[in-house]
Image (cartoon, rainbow, N blue to C red; front, side, top):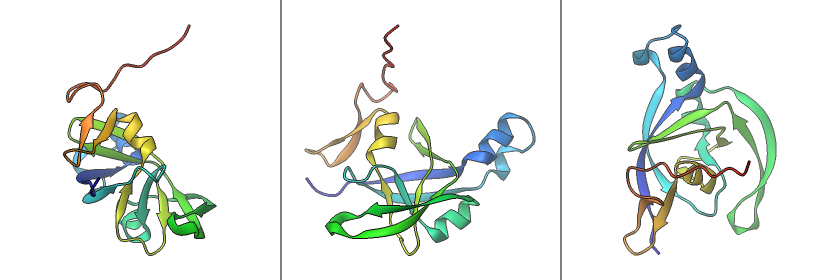
Length: 140
């Protein structure tokens, strides 16, 4: 399987809440369109410090994380960002690596947006079709 890169728009999650409660207009939502590497070895959305600042996301906590290749490092967890890809959205607290320039899209937001990697065509596809956000199954 080759690399899968997708164009995403990331938005400040708090700004989106302000739009919904009428204290901010949609035009003022801080957002950035980026090319992200789909990384099924990553759990979350991973961004760099510069992108965190552009989105205006605060820092919630610091964590120690294991990176590919067996490296261990400290990273920050930022306030929520909304990921927008085609007709799909996910709200997630991104991991922030200080000098990271590449955006990584991990498995938790992929699952939430009902997406998977098509290894034959090296692209993202909807698990339950292109227009479906999937079925939520609950046991009552």
